[in-house]
Image (cartoon, rainbow, N blue to C red):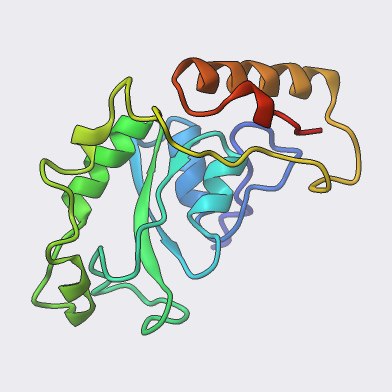
Length: 173
């Protein structure tokens, strides 16, 4: 039987974000605490962004894909976490990442997982000295709404307070 379309849990009137949108909706809509998403070209990142959750698109070969039927399995497809918080996503990445005898691509993971894991790097100093890209001119064909601009400004302020960006780099709409 047909189950129907997947909607965006944040706002059903807007796009859900791509092929891992079911996973994103389950996490965003509180049906699941974590989800495993598969990506060839944006299917972890787009649904996560559209539905206000965290998605991590790992490097190719970091996470085994045995048992997955990817679109371009030998070249680009990856699995990655969908979660509500960065810490939850990092913990899930710690569990998912690593070498597997069943997937020769994961030889790339050997020696490339940080000491202590990914979750160990999540702290209030993690953004210090980091360079972050901000939404800028030319990305939209219309101005941000007043509400969206205010929310964006608040997010930029929080990133500044965490040491991730400098005020001079704040041209965004």
